[in-house]
Image (tube, rainbow, N blue to C red; front, side, top):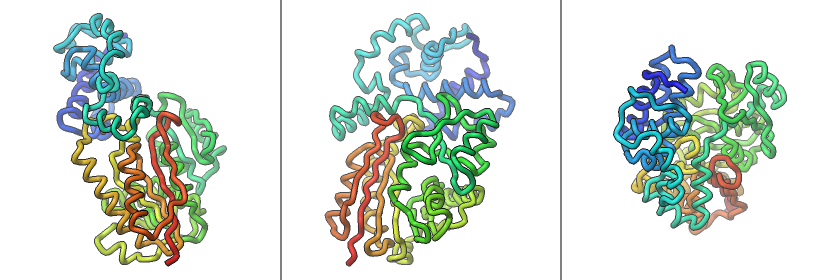
Length: 394
C-alpha cells in the first residue's frame, strides 16, 4: 500500500502537536481538516487513524521503533497498518523489518510500556484497583464504537434507524438501552447528520446516567455540571419536555453550545444557567432531583480520548478530587428535602467515586440508595460511576 507524502507529514505534525504542545487530539484533527477542505474521506481516515493509534500506543510504538521521535512512532504504526515505509520518510529508529521482529518481545515488557500509559498512572491504577487494573486498562486501549442516543422528542428508534439507513449509515439497537444505537465498527456519523436533531452522539455508558435520576413529568430537575448538555438533553427527553430542566455550568461557552443543541433537539423545557457564587443559595430547595456529573479525571473515556493520559498530571487529579468533595458539600442545598441526588463521574477510580460520596454521607443528611459502576472491561463502553442518594426530609 502506498502513502501520500503530504498526508503522512500532516499526521506526524498533528501527533507532534499533541505530544509537545499538549493539544487536545480531537481539536487538533478538526483544525487540520478545516484548514484542508480538499482532503477526501480516505485522506482524513488515514490521518485520523494514524494520529489516534500513535497517541494511544505511544510507548509500545516507541519500544517497537526503539525511538521516542514522532516520525519513528508513525512509521511503527504504519507498519502495523500494513503500509510499506517509503524511502522519502526519514526518522531516527529501527527499520520496518526490525520493528516487526520486536512485536514478539512487546508482551514481555512492563505493563506501562505494553499498554502505553505513564508510569505514575500505572502505579495509581494498581493502587486503586489492584488486579482489576490489567483488564480495565486493556479495555480502555480498545477503539471506541460510536453510540448514538435517539432524541425521542423528535422521533422513535425505529424511525431513526430507517432515516440513518436512507443516509447510508447502518445503525443497530443496543440491548438494555431503549434509546441507544451503535454504528458498525470503524464507522462515524457524517457531519451533516450530527446537527439534524434526531440523534445525538453519546456513549452507551453515559446514556445510563440520566435514567438513574428518574425524572418525572412536571418536575424541576437541576443538572449542576451540565457542560454542553448531553445528559441534560436526555433528561428533557425522558420528561417528555414537561416541567423544567435547569442546565448549569461554570463555563459560558459550553452553555452556549448547549443552547444550540437544545434548540435543534426541540428541548423547550431546558433552561441554561451560568453558575456563580450565589447559585446554590438562589436555588435553595428548588430541585425535585439533582444530578452532579462532577468534573473528574475522565479516565473512563480513554477509548475516545487517548491523549488524555498524556495530558493528565497527578496534581490535576488532586484538584478534581477536591472539587468533587466541594460540590457535594454545596450543591445539595439546591435539592428539596426528600429529593433524589445522583452523583456521577466518567472515572474508574474509587478515590473519585465512592470516596467522594462517603464524604457526603459522613456529613449526614443523605441515605445511599444504590451505586452503579460501569466497567469498560465488562461492558466494552466508557467507564462511569453513579451513586443515587435520598435527601432526608428534615
